[in-house]
Image (cartoon, rainbow, N blue to C red; front, side, top):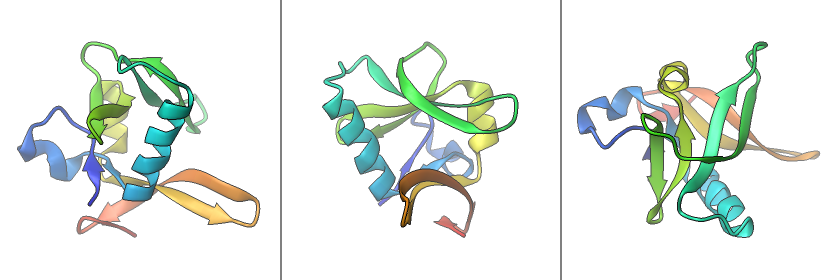
Length: 111
């Protein structure tokens, strides 16, 4: 089961970011480890060079969000949410460790 970023509108789910279960669990663990309140989530953003950044942040009015395990775990500004549409957030494992990665989604699954 994957989670989608949105505002709960089922009609929009297919075009929003999908969060793979392993990534959702990692985000939840990061929030729990930080002893964050339910008013904080991980914010996904991009710098001027297009590199993805993720950091704890307050949930802002108008944010698009991913709800997992009874709380908001990931938020994005509306313009960032548009960039994320059609992608899946997943965990990429290598000998150097694990990192979050975005992959283009096709047919509901990450390529």
